[in-house]
Length: 216
Image (cartoon, rainbow, N blue to C red; front, side, top):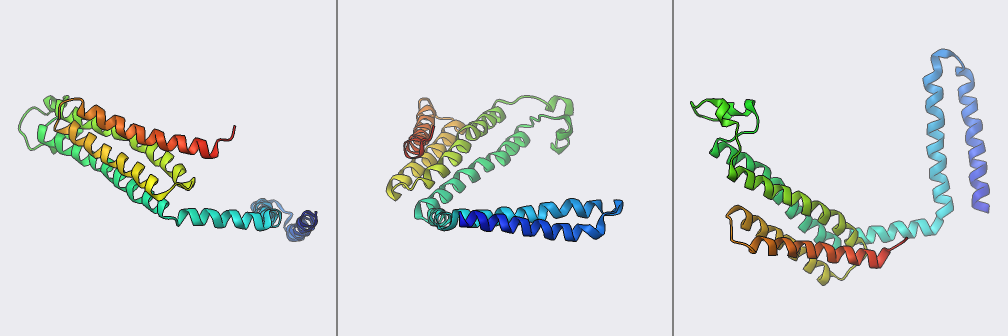
């Protein structure tokens, strides 16, 4: 109650301060200034209310969040997430390499990059090797993006380091194996097993998140 009264008094004081500031500027040319002032003191009041209302609980929550971010689990997640994201980014130059070497372009203007005297209109075509790399890249997008989101939530639930490392390593290893099996290519079910393993790791982390913080 005392905190609420302090905040109310602060709001009134700030409102009076704003009125005193805007009084000399009640002219058409000063409209932008009068529009800025309410936003300024409103942000200040909201911050004051948050600090006074939450008090020690707010500070404790921020401290706990900071501890989670500094934990070994979060650092491990950052490492493995960076690895798979870089791997996914690498697929773009690989696609460009195959387009140049196979002389198969998606756009007419791209054919100027080919060192060839062939009819450039014929170079706008679909090549099976290029399409294979593109499908591999698409599969990365469909699996790595969910891993990054769910893995972040999973790391914030405070799992054991050994369990977290197992999930992260299994997923990263499965994606690397999936790419090798897709690009070489290796006979099935090698690629299917790699994809299923990565999906199982992400699903396991999702189950942990739901068990820990389910709120319906």
